[in-house]
Image (cartoon, rainbow, N blue to C red; front, side):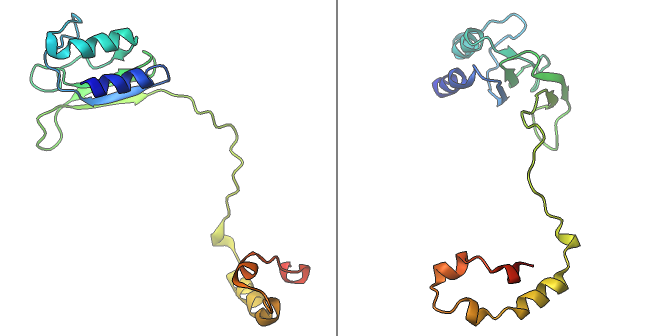
Length: 152
């Protein structure tokens, strides 16, 4: 529990979503109270001003699987549903609301399917490679820029 609390304290100040089976059946999330087992965890959630979004039982009558976030608005549309396959925990679906900081990504993307591979092969065959690499070591051969006549 101390390791979990340490990690929560480390990351709570940024936009954070923490989810999983915390196995703390003694925490009553409606009354926001717990006995000794969950008290440290509940205190950490409170001290870090975190939100717990799961309000329905995820195993039996207990809320064991949690979605905790640093902002109420980061997580939405939380739904607790039936278990998947032979799991004894209910499944949870939800949305994470976030903004992307990428604006107009200008990455070059080549469309290789439109390349004229026959022309490329022909041009490669026309190069006199022995002359191009004459008296060069391996490093120089790998980094050599070709003359203008070969770049056309």
